[in-house]
Length: 96
Image 1 (cartoon, one colour):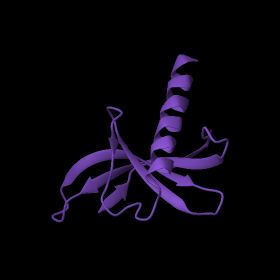
Image 2 (cartoon, rainbow, N blue to C red; image 1 turned 45 degrees about the vertical axis):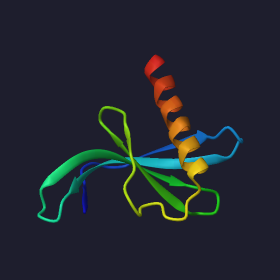
Image 3 (spheres, rainbow, N blue to C red; image 1 turned 60 degrees about the horizontal axis):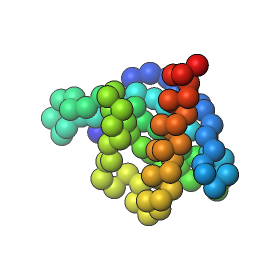
């Protein structure tokens, strides 16, 4: 279960194969079956050219968190390169 905490921000990334994706970031609380908050994560919803959405999660400390059954059928290479492109984008903005 999850609960949204703030509005989304839309950004764009370009993967090494020159494909373009847009993504939104929002903060969500992950709760257990009893409703207790077990994690506070940034949720990255990535939209590909075919209109399919993938969801990636990152902790406040910068560690990617994979939730089971969230991206079933997604190519692992796409998810990994998306994470790398997002990290690169974030690091570039920190340097500015």
